[in-house]
Image (cartoon, rainbow, N blue to C red; front, side, top):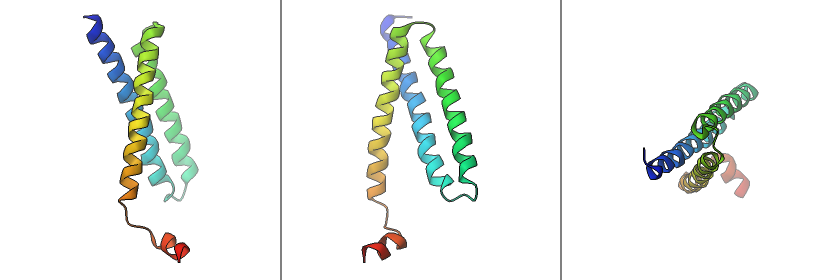
Length: 104
């Protein structure tokens, strides 16, 4: 496999791991705050997301630190992208009743 294709796949794996990790965090927060047992949601979520990402980094890096750094770069870029997307989507949501009561 060519070096350029390898680097692209390593970076893409980092983006995918970041999307899974931070997308899962966003999903957990939205569901967990409405749950009767939010601590369970958050604990299970952080354990699953962290183990998946650490395992993914281990497999993708294959013992080579440049691959680990490139994967980490993709991971951080996914974080920035998802942060931007969720901020944009939250601006378009209608305000809740509690927010409306507080603003009045």
